[in-house]
Image (tube, rainbow, N blue to C red; front, side, top):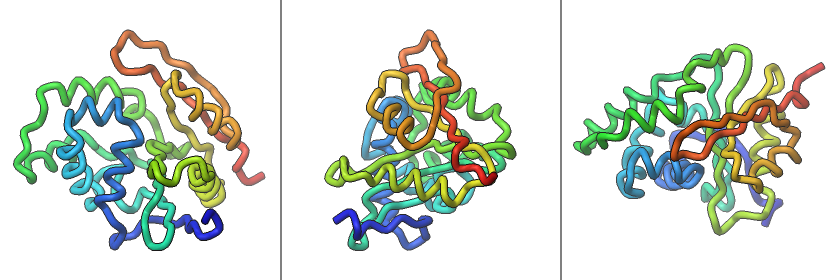
Amino acid sequence: MIDKIIIRKAVGTDDVKQIAKLIYSSDLNIYGAMFGDVNCAARILQELISTDTINISIKNLVVAEYEKTVVGMLCFIEEDYMNDREAYKQAFSKLAIEVPKYFDGVFDMYWKKVIKEDFTNAYYISNVAVDEAYQNLGIGKMLLNYFKETHKDKPIGLDVVKDNAQAINAYLKSGFEIVEKEHKNTDLPAPVRMVCYKSLKV
């Protein structure tokens, strides 16, 4: 099976419903807190994937494809950080879904550090997920390797919750190193910042 997996940039004809499901599964803590409902999240995320005004839009996605089905995805930020907050709210409005009263608080708590960053000097991986039926096959590593091979001009950063030992170990094996740990008084798990320098051209 693994030799039939294709890793490529996402395109407009990809199954955005499946990609939305993967994005949601990539961080149940934050998306569950922001939307509170998987069906609501799926509708909002599908709308956002189809735009070019947010970091989870098609142009910022890499997908893993098996027999024409998207089974994994990686989402990244390069250059300017996009104003996700307003894009999310516009999607809520377009779909006639009321914005949850806790949306802004959760958004600020989660994205505060990322929003302040200058992405002219580094890439940032915001989401990685593999469909549950295709996990433990190395697809996540394939997505990371593809991104590292095609983005060698700057370091690559990402955040992972400190309690997710499996993900941290996977990133360490893929050449990332821990550069910063954050400890916040919050109900959401604090992130660990990891960076990969090994893919840089010398």
